[in-house]
Each structure stands twice: as structure tokens, then as C-alpha cells.
Image 1 (cartoon, rainbow, N blue to C red):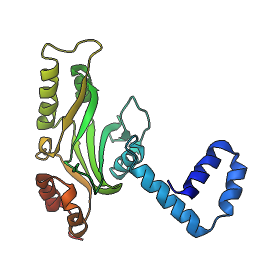
Image 2: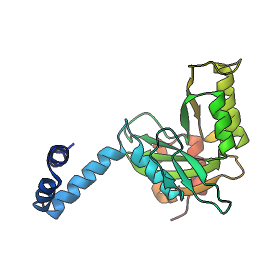
Image 3: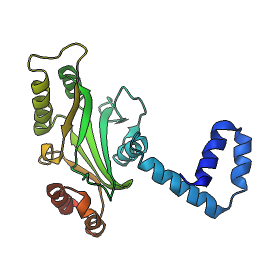
Length: 219
């Protein structure tokens, strides 16, 4: 965090709105732009919070974002009256790190009961990938996609072969692009054009990169 952003954050947290407004008005346009870019870079790459990445993923797909930590991440109205809900799974990796985007995500503290609930809701899953906070893709598919559901079921059955145990959870039910890429209703919400996508080749697992290259716009 640069010195200017640190000072703005400190004033916001400890002073009145009037004091903050006066402080910001005294800064040049260049200083304010630099502070905003630094703040966005820090927030988009925050390992402890995916709120902004989640917001971008949900809104680009046409949903209204919700910040309820217990429920789903967004909804949109349908002609049938009942809102269509979505669950967003954004991934962010560093360009200088070892982790690569695999089109996946995970469901924390999962159970057979929660799987049944998610299937009943008939929601959609949104997966997105960021490198250093920069968005590469957003994909959407129905939670009910057979290959996707099978992947979750296998992990649950391995953890709870006799069914759920009160107070116990599957800490992480994970998946990757192979578990939904053949889904009939898979939708490409957003993807970088081919020339820009190629710059991130080393940050994406090979098979998934090949898939993205096929669906990416030419320019």
C-alpha cells in the first residue's frame, strides 16, 4: 500500500466525512488517479477477500449481486416469476506464481444435504479467472450439469459413504473445467480476445487454455 492510499484509508476510518472531502479536494487529479489504481490493484488481488472479483463475475453475467454470505451470490428475474440464482467461483492467480487457472472452484463445508438443496434451487454456476486481478474469462453453466454433479457426488460419497454426519463437513468439494466443459448449456459470458489471451498462456493449464482459445473472439 503506497503512502497516499494509507493516509486516505486512515482518514476515512478515523476522521469525519467533511475532513476526508477537504483532504481529497486538496489532492491533484494525478495523485487521486494513482491512489485509486493502487487501491484497485490491492483489492482485486486480496487473497482474503474475493468480493470485488465476485461482483464483476456476477454482474457481467447479467445478475444482481448479493452480499449475503449464507445464500447465493446473485439473482436475476425470469419470465416465470421465480428469480434465477447463481453461485460465483472466481479464481485469481499471480503471474509470477506457480498456480495456474484451471477453470475450477470449490464449495466449502459441503454435505449431501447441501447438494440436494443446490439441485433443488436449479441455480447456475459462474466460473471466472483473473491473473493479477485482470479478468480473462467468465463461463456459466447449470449446476445440474450431470458430469459436474457426479464430480461433487463422488467426493461426498468418499467422505460420507453412509450419508451425512451431524456437525461434519466435506471441507472442500472441488471441480475444474473437465467437469463441465461438455455441458450442453455452457455459455461463454466473457473471454479475452485471442491476441490478449495468448499473453497469459503460461498462467492457464494446457487443456483449459486450448478450450479458451477455441471460444475466444478474434479481436
